[in-house]
Image (cartoon, rainbow, N blue to C red; front, side, top):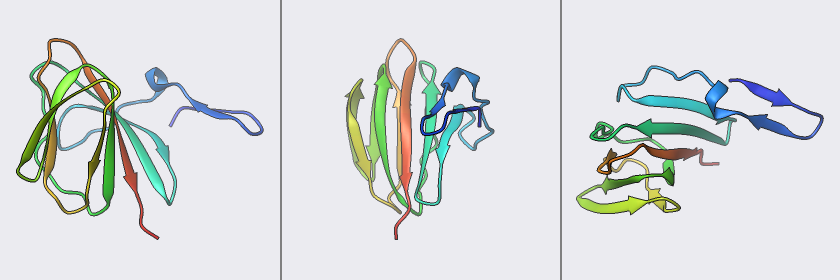
Length: 113
């Protein structure tokens, strides 16, 4: 992770973080990671989609830019910038870029205590 640290303030500049290989073969950058939470910045080009998958922890997505669709279980909904989506653990889900521009979102994985 490319982290700029001060005494109290820690910042991450997303463009300076290297993408990691993932099963979805899309741009994914881990920008925060602790024992309690993990945040991944993802960017999908028009027509790109995540593969339908499950996670063993609760997740939420926050849409930063663009338009797309989210599928959780059997439900599907169109989403756009400034939308937060809750995705319970062990339920199949995916996000797709259905727009004409870049679709960027944060994936926040929450560890249970």
